[in-house]
Amino acid sequence: MTLAIISHTEHYKTSDGTIVGWSPTVNEINHLLEVFDRIYHVAMLYEGEPPASTMAYADERIVFVPLRPSGGRSFLNKLYSIWEAPSVIHTVSRTLKQVDCFHLRTPTGIGVYLIPYLTLFSNKKGWYKYAGNWNQNNPPLGYRLQRFMLKHQKRTVTINGQWEHQPKHCVTFENPCLTLDDLELGQQIKETKCMDGTLNFCFVGRLESEKGVAIIIKAFGMLSDSDKKRVGRVHFVGDGPKANYFKRLAQGIDGIEFLFHGFLSRHEVFDIYKQSHIFMLPSMASEGFPKVIAEAMNFGCIPIVSDVSSITQYINASNGYVLDAVTISSMTTQLKHSLNLSVEAYRQLIDAQTDFIYKFSFDYYNKRIKTLVTIT
Image (cartoon, rainbow, N blue to C red; front, side, top):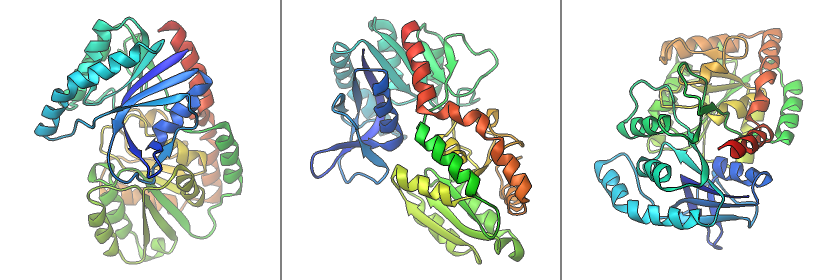
């Protein structure tokens, strides 16, 4: 069976002509070759140097179909996205003729017109994915339109979390990010990781205010001198337009070693998890369930997270810390709790994570996709 995936995933061309894309999506598609014989990925091709967070496809059976970049937050960007619509639809239509089914990843700028196009003009099997906060009260207009259209059509939609009044065709689906080898290695790391000595902290994601980066930095500044002595290193993995601002902010905090790594490869990110004891994501952004939470927990990190979207359907007092509010004060309180955890309490939190981590494996995901394709 052949599949067309349509997304806004950023791709780049290396100096030797190799196409690389954002690692989490490319890695997921690589593993889908266990389900599909051939995959076409219709997505954006950007100019410039590929960031370290990209990777190449693992097999020639995955064919990249480039789109000109479009979309963005500004009015002109949105206008250009509409201008590009005929070209995008033409490329998608041409690709659909070569496959048995399709998968559209939303929300995205091109989703505003591709959802109605695919719903009304394609008889192919297919399913949609809504990666944002399905239960968001006041989403941006584009997100709201896409969510409305997905609620009112017949094909299956995979979403993050489980919600009251969820339509029958909207199916709760975890985002895969771990191999069976990762799960086995994670178990080994958990058995050797301990709370003796200093503790390392990490954040992985876009460096922006909506992700709570400034709150994290300022919260460490609010710790007492005795608590600061228990802090080893605070790792920030990722990048963003405000990265230099956050670095300057961190320089003003005495007694804490902050390390800003920029974008890292998947392997390098996993190395950060292995070194760390606490993972932090005090996000205020529109999240589904960020893969980085499951990845970090797999390697024995206790999460400190906010109550956004479906996050608290997986994280609670038995396996992590949930902020009462996304504030410096609340973050400081949870940092203090984590720094004063007993060995026994840490082990209880770690052991409680085991039950659901498998749901974020490629093995579990692919088994569900096989079922999904037969019924869609």
